Image 1 (cartoon, rainbow, N blue to C red):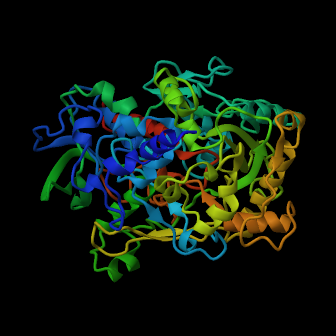
Image 2: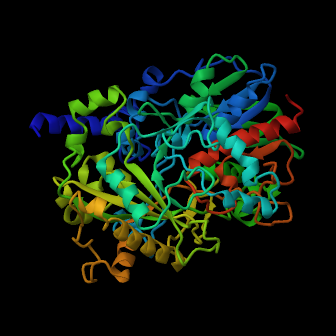
Image 3: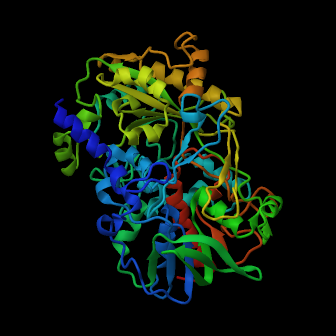
Length: 618
């Protein structure tokens, strides 16, 4: 590796920092002065349309659910739709390269939330706080996420249906998953569970390392079936499926908005910060928003649809007087409707590990300097090579003894095989993404920099830890407050220990041994007093190198009106208010069995049909 190549890597890895503003005021960049998206962003039509006095529908939030709804409602040229988004258009040069997706966490396409200080988790992270990455812009978190497409387990949806949400069973929602898809999955796209011709490209990664081949074969050797985890059953192992097209990220905006940018009945406003819902008697009739330093109003004839995500939707409802009565009164907000907004908040606790080295593997993926080479950039342009694949490669879904549901076909932990470790990149963007303390980076990960290493991401899907979201103040520009303590329920921690020990077993099989794979036995700081590969060591390890799923759900929980923990009904109508719905992953009642972007697309598709039905639209 030459000095020039190394410098090239540092520059390329930091590109996102230099052309997009940081959310953190202590980390201001050129993007604070210049909005590069106005020249380099994807084209979604007129960025400053002549607005109507009255729209049929206003959609607040251009994440995957909101974008799908705006697309589907505007299919009817007689229906007018206004889509309001706080962020801006994505920049393909930055956002569409899967291999450097983590750089987006350091840009203003990320809200850059952090957790409250943790008691039992994130002990090896800066200030004992985990990062809570949440995307903003036309595409929401699909601009910055790892592009993994996982629908979860059919039993998730049957549970929703059985607990007072008719129309949300697996048989009901499967057609909506398929409606979005244009699937090209090597072994499974003809199995009857994937769609063709939809707006959303779902594909295999065009590049696979020998590690993922060894992982899938080894998982099969220890007894896991080879499955399409987005098919009829989830328990087993498989290769990752992504929302990519020929090795490039396909965000919700690029998929559902760019192809329809010429629709005259759909107006899209970026950098529009919605601060309040307007009510008339018992009906939502519009919103107030700020844009270009001015305050504006938009009016809706039929409905206002809130699709701001698990944090944004709950925050806007409470700012508008819809939320827990006592909390709103304490902040001086006039109560419009007393509802348990923000009372339920779930995520997927996770851990960065275990870590392994591969002494016989020479695939030039030792570190970022080698991955981000001129040769690999050329491969990426041609739709292949390591830059065309995100860090995740393979999956295994397992059942632990600590699962809250007894069904053996309803796995509660997920093993994600990653092609590298945090030791392969020391750019500021990578450090901000993981928030790992310098001591841990230096003593645990840095020794791996010139070695071929990889790791697992172990995730608890059915977390029994519950938190809440509250407003910091009635100032709409303040971040909300999060009350969430990972591992508050010890079953989550025990399930992660089980998952890491399963990873050790899988990785001890012959396909891995043939690659010279061995466990990385250096002990993580804070756990050096414990014997390696014991339950106590892995427990300490999980508390130290805690990671999170970024799969936040539940703040606007869906349920029947008699369920006093619910905010919306099965038609996504806010209880007791006409003309107002919430349609995004905030409505998911409990921690799901999959990563939430796939759920968001499905919810958007189903919500659009519900809205059309209730408004007698074809």
